[in-house]
Image 1: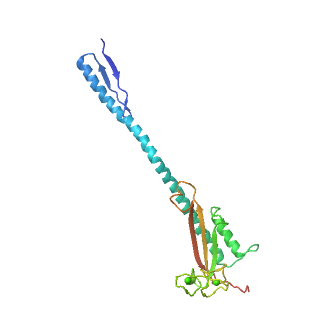
Image 2: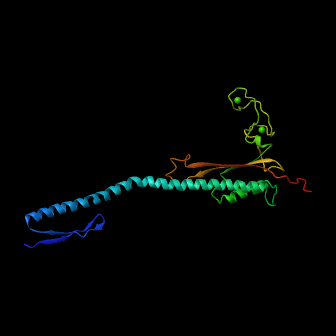
Image 3: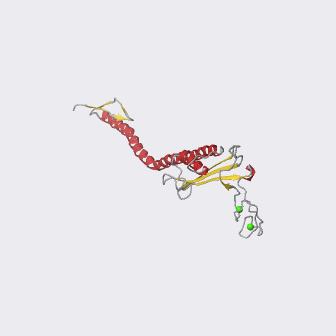
Amino acid sequence: MKDRTIESGWYFGLTIPLKAVITHSKAAQGYDLRMWRVLRGFRRPIECRRGAALIEFAFTMPIITLMITGIIEFGMILFVQNLMEGGLRDASRYGITGQEKAGSSRLEQIKDIVEDRTIGLVDMSKADFQVLVYSSFGAIGQSEEYDDANGNGSYDTGEDFTDLNGNGAWDEDIGEEGAGDSGDIVVYRLSYDWNLLTPLVKPFVGKDGLFPLQASVAVRNEPWDVSGS
Ligand SMILES: [Ca+2]
Ligand SMILES: [Ca+2]
């Protein structure tokens, strides 16, 4: 019988030019058998690795997806936060000059600047935007003084208080709404619950799919001639 010659194929991603001569002698047959076992042994790990890679991919894909969406979400949060801070900065720069263009009030114009700078990502109808006037920087965020009769550390209805702004009620913040007069201390505050974009991140960040964002800036109004002379 004639000897047969075969060429090996693809192993380890490479074509190995290996030639095996199958002879019909017993010694040669034994050699061929060993050779094929070795070659088959090379192929098996490759096939096993392919299957293992699929399983690894199936396990890691949700984690990778979560990471990518998380990066996008936090990128957007930082972006909107920066827009809010930039919007307040520009609004306060306008506010401290005391100018008021015809057609709308000074506060409305200040709010329009914030809305413009946040490029529609902050819904001003849902945002909490405050412009408050204080007598000094130290008074920012202070409440009206009260007599804590029941000693619980907070104001309760019926307890005496000093009605600084004369509105007949105790105020937790003594700031008065308005853009202020010449030389006044004015605080601009913007709070907005950012609606997270993807449901994947919502269970881990914020509350009920919302992430609270806040920005504020305190300025002193420029001295301007209030008499207009
Ligand atoms: Ca009390
Ligand atoms: Ca009050």
